[in-house]
Length: 266
Ligand code: NAD
Image 1 (cartoon, helix red, strand yellow):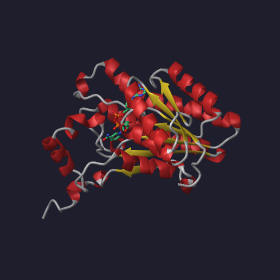
Image 2 (tube, helix red, strand yellow):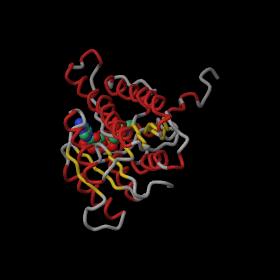
Image 3 (cartoon, rainbow, N blue to C red):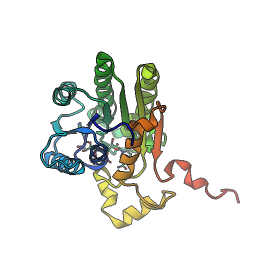
Image 4 (cartoon, rainbow, N blue to C red):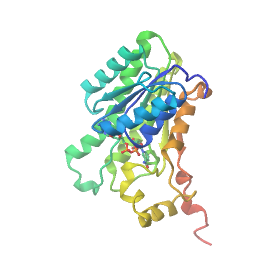
């Protein structure tokens, strides 16, 4: 992809799944990568090793491991300060960290509701705020990608806080894109469909449950983290220089209303 060589990217929640694949892909594209993780140091080290291999360096040089919880403002400030100290700047922010919680909506504990919003939505906003401050302060362009979900538009019963957080990310993406479009800052999102990662371990690791999930997907299979990372690599590159405020759905057709393939009334 054009324009990525030598750029610096900060990827939140990069110790597993989609975030890990994005960090590795951006390293392959020639980026320095700051790899944020919350608890899983081993996973983050795997990301780092794969990223270093991708760029042909044995010793960590173009990568940085950053422990931090995106629900905590102080941690976010530290992530940005440490990345800038190490690489001199940040060009790309990937708001990937995310959690979900399953409960009937009338039974959700307030703390549980708050936690999902604090990680998925507030954390993404606070990271975006720090990135934008950095870019405006240095008078430089920048790119943000929010990792949303098909549940940005598809309501998901039993996952209310998750659905709300991803719906909020759509508006965060559009509002920031509009507000900063004339200052060289682009803000987009990708919306993964059902992707085989740890967040879905309850069905990815069970062949019967997985078959049920995949039967609902028009392409009849789950997506991969690498397929999500490919969409991100395009959107952060100069090849997407005129794209802002958009969500790219990477979902095997999940948002195409598969139930309408056959006429209901025939
Ligand atoms: P995952 O569980 O492997 O990844 C989530 C990552 O976020 C983990 O590495 C986790 O440690 C990190 N994280 C959680 N809370 C954090 C915090 N407070 N601070 C920092 N990091 C934190 O699952 P994934 O599928 O790779 O999820 C990545 C993103 O993709 C999430 O935002 C998720 O909502 C989104 N997504 C996933 C799917 C899917 O089907 N897998 C579909 C749509 C959207």
